[in-house]
Amino acid sequence: MIEIQNLTKTFSVVGEDGKQETFDALKNVSLTVGDGEIYGIIGMSGAGKSTLVRCINMLERPTEGKVLIDGTDMGSLSEKELRQMRRSITMIFQGFNLLMQRTCLDNICFPLELSGVKRTEAVRRASELLETVGLPDKAKAYPAQLSGGQQQRIAIARALATQPKVLLCDEATSALDPNTTHAILELIRDINKKLGITVIIITHQMSVVEEVCSHVAILDHGCVVETGEVAEVFSAPKSDAARRLVFPDADKSPMEAEIPGGIPAAGNPDDIPVRLVFDGSHTTDRAMITQMAIDTGIAVNILYASTRCIGDKVFGNMLLGIPGGMEAVERVKAYFADDPQIMIEPAAKEDRADA
Amino acid sequence: MLDRMFSAEALEEALWILKNEFPLALWETFYVTVLATLFAIILGMPLGVLLVTGEKGGVRPLPAWLMQVLNVVINLLRSVPFLILMILVFPLTRLIVGTTVGTVASIVPLVIAAFPFVARLIEGSLREVNPNIIEAAQSMGASPFQIVWKVMIPESVPSLISNVTIAVTTVLGYSAMSGIIGGGGLGKIAINYGYYRYKYLVMLMAVILLILLVQVFQSLGTYLSVHSDKRIRNRKK
Image (cartoon, rainbow over all chains, first blue to last red; front, side):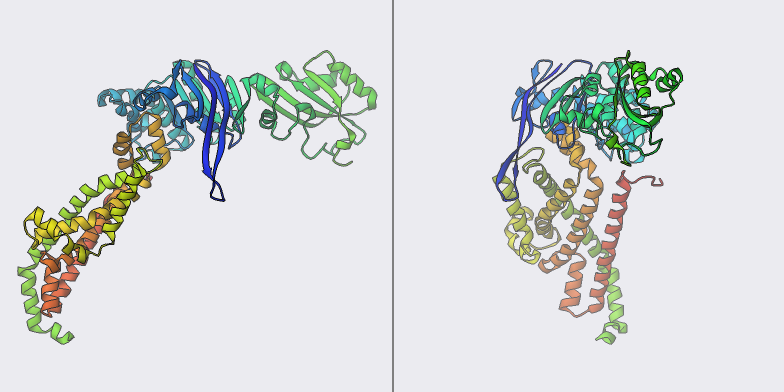
């Protein structure tokens, strides 16, 4: 278990006027990460994510507060003990940071070499790990000959070489394209399941947290503003920072989310615009709108729709044009009335782009 | 002057000198250069490492005053003109070699002149190493010594080779100057025949040989540097 208690990190910087100024990168941060979890820490750039993750393995010494890993206070360790400890808390990076003059095999052997493992034993373990990350044929290749995704796989293999308890991922997928990101996240999830390694993922990408994390902490200007299970935090973001991340195109809740460019002008001008918000669960299991149109005989026009999948739940926001006046609107409302996860309200006429 | 320089007897004499004195001179220049560079690397390498690792924020910071002293000493040695330095280090040369004249004696001032230069070159090479790679090594529990020995030096090998090549060619140039204090080699021939006895043709030949030597060292250095670099993609084996 990783416990971060009241962590504060202050940097002193020389300001433009030449005076020493202090800057709090982290302010009183407390987090608890359970064993075997995949814990996401998300925030905009400059929120202090990288500093936070570096405080966990003491690459940055916190100014105040403690980091406890399985009860061991990281700050109280001597340099030597700390180096020993770091073998069980390894890290992967945005820029992969492989040794460019070593082959992939030797890169994976590197941490073993540092801890004095015999060469033959190290090579055996490294070959196994190449297998684990799916690149058994790249043993003799140099990092420059590999793609970004392959380099990150080698970096993951290297991080696993010393059989760590914790894997820290510092923006590990930020330099990769979406497909490669997906593949790397799959690998991380696999490793987490098979080896039971606790994973901490630092990212600015919502999609990364949605895809693999079980828990998330939202970091904003050095403070933790929200923590909890991913589905919970993302479906009902309470803080402004969380809302900005979950609905980047709106700073309001989904109910009030703005439609880019207003309500589309397309469709019959006599239709009454109605907003429909659905909130999780089974809403995509059935052809909801089509079924409603068939059952009520009202040919609704979908003017705008936006959905987002979080975990296995779906959240969405839809704008319907309903022909047939207020009477039809009431019938549509009544049709969905027994479903608590669907909310309907009239969209303001003034929202219309052509108004 | 030119007609005298290329007259039949001048040419004949020059060829005789070329045959009888140049082989030894070439060998002397070669071994003085190689030995002096080698010693300069032995002294300059640790200094260059300290300059990078010892600074504030380095992998093993040293007291600021010590770094200051180190920097001043290196700059001081580098700012003394080689001609003066050769004479200044006479006592040291006598202490080490037993005499201040001759080919072997000329190695001492060459080393003294070259090692601060080498230290700076090595400092430059080590600074090119991506700091993120060093951070990665730290995150894996590497000690400062392991970082220097297993990360910084191996990662900067291509740059180190190309900088050592610069050192070799500079020492070669200096070694020619040591002809003044009785150091052997092509420099001595150029000075003795060309400057003291107006045999310009001999001087010209010595200079051409020096140019060729520089070319050979530089080409070899560039070849080794490029071929040791694993960052270059898809190079044909």
